[in-house]
Length: 220
Image (cartoon, rainbow, N blue to C red; front, side):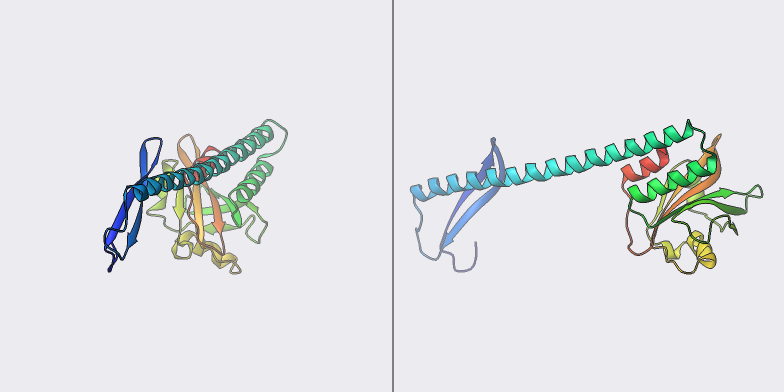
């Protein structure tokens, strides 16, 4: 109770037999409440509980609707890529289309595909969206002591502090007009061997990546 309160009455807030909260009223008078007050407070508490539960249900329904829409968008993207694979499009066109759709779907600022050169020490940008001066560029692959073992297992690697990572720093040397705030690195594997990296980047705002987003990139 608050200082100065001489009487307090408390009623449970219940919905379907579950207590979801309590409703309390205080007074600065002794013996301020009677049985009728308790009954009234119980009724008010149950009405308040029903309203809270209704709001919670609406929020859950909205969250479910958003999740369903996201899954539908993911399926559309996978279907588009599957259609492209079965058409006459060449590999570079498919990669560019894939990067473009992932950048749009995940609301990123930039994406590219880096393929490992045969020497294992260089990568080449073979696809990107939107187009920047990096397309076709060959650059040294910096040491990735923490990221590479994860990528070789086929697990996406999120980087929330992009400006502190050696890979975006190498890209910045070629395109100093951008600043990588957050990145997601997705491994490209062939026969369980790392042959390239799909890079998705946010320039202005740091962001985290959900399990569903990383799973989508991994699937694609």
